[in-house]
Structure formats: C-alpha cells, structure tokens
Amino acid sequence: MIQRTLLRQTRALGPSIRPATRSSLTRTQFQPTNQSLRAGSRPVASARWYGTETDAKKAGEGDAAAAAEGKNGENGDPVKKQLEAKDKEIVELKDRYLRSVADFRNLQERTKRDMQVAKDFAISKFAKDLVDSVDNLDRALAIVSQEKLDSQEDSEHLRDLLSMHEGLKMTESILMQTLKKHGLERFDPSVDAEPFNPNEHEATFMAPMEGKEDNTVFLTQQKGFKLNGRILRAAKVGVVKNK
Image (cartoon, rainbow, N blue to C red; front, side, top):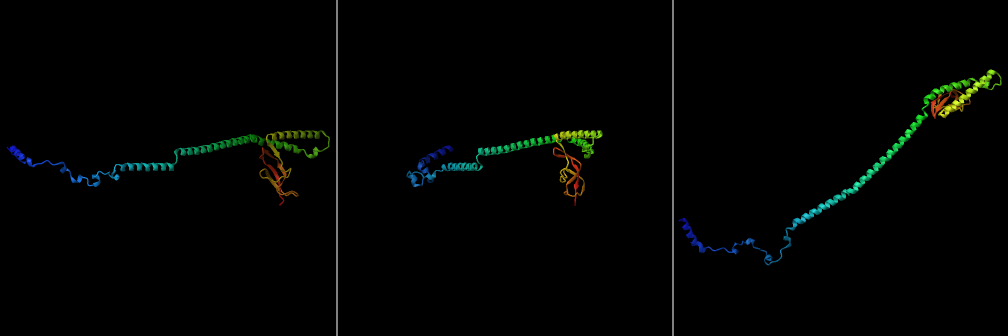
C-alpha cells in the first residue's frame, strides 16, 4: 500500500523536474577571470614553479664544489705533501748516516790510540823494576874516581880495576841503548842546569849557590827515567835558592 502511494507521487512530480545543464553545474570560482587567458594568450613565464627546486639544487652543488676546491687549495696537493715528507725523511736519514760514520771513525781512532798506549806502556811495570838495577850499575861506575882513571901508574891492581870499569861502562852503554830502543830513557837535569820542573823533578833540598840563577837544578841525587815521553820516575835534585 505504501509502495503504491510513493509511486503515484513520483509520477505526479515527474514533468516538473528538469535535468540540470552542464553550464549550470560550473562554479564561477573555477571560471578564468584573466581576460588574456580567455583570449588564448601565452601564460606568463614566472608561473613556471617546477624550475625553482632544480636551480637551488644546482646552486648548492656549485657552492659545495667551490668549498671543496678552496679546501683543497688550502690543504695543498696530497702528492706534493707526501714528496715533501719523503724529502724530509731522506735528509734525516742522511744526517743519521753521517753521524754514524763519524762516530764509527772516532771509535776507530780512539781504539787505535788506546792500543798504541797499551803497547807503549805495556812494559812500564817491568821498567820500574829494571831502573833499580840501572841505578846500581851507575853507582858501581861512580866508585872509581876520575883520578884513578887518569892515573899513569902501571900496576896489576890498577889495570884490573880499569878493565872492570871499562867492562861495566860497555855493559851500561849497551843496556841503555836497548832500553832506549823500547822507549825507556834516562835524564839528568843537572847537566844543563835546567829550571826546576815539578812535573819531572823532585826537590829534596834547596841551597844558595853563587853565580847560579834561582830555581835551577845544580845537583842530581838520583837520575830520572821517561817511558815514551811519560815520566816513569822523577829525578831527585837539589835546587838553587839565593833569596
């Protein structure tokens, strides 16, 4: 019953309902208001929004490249820096090499000197023990006075004494030549009246002497010895002291 009533009402209203046209459905806000667009003119170039993001991206890439180039300019070429580091290392290694060579040569010279010193003074202990025997031989020769040596007396005892003295003198001469060959020399500062030298002489007493200069050696009580220029035993002497 209800359905029939609705069907009748619809049929009654049918002639009064008209379909809406297309133009009526168009809203005024969607219609173009620019007269130039209506006339079919070209749109303005500033309306190209799609190009703004691309230009900004390119500008950013350009700034990054410029910054990277400036950074590389400040830091320098890495290859150049590496070459400079290698050159510096070469200079340091060369300096170390030269120093090592110099140290090795100094060591060679020092070792050579030490060996020579050890060789020159290897007999120092033996020489110190030997000088006492040389002193005794010198004392034995000094017993025979110069008067007896110059005497014209012709006696058997005197001839024997002179022969013994001559033999001792020859023995002393040969011994001193042998010692000198090995670097041991005897010296007597009173022969030339040498000035007193505390490095070579040992003053046992001092006395005034007329006609002699102060601080000179006038008497040798015990002769000194040198071994290769080094004092092995200082000479015991008497020194002039006039004041």
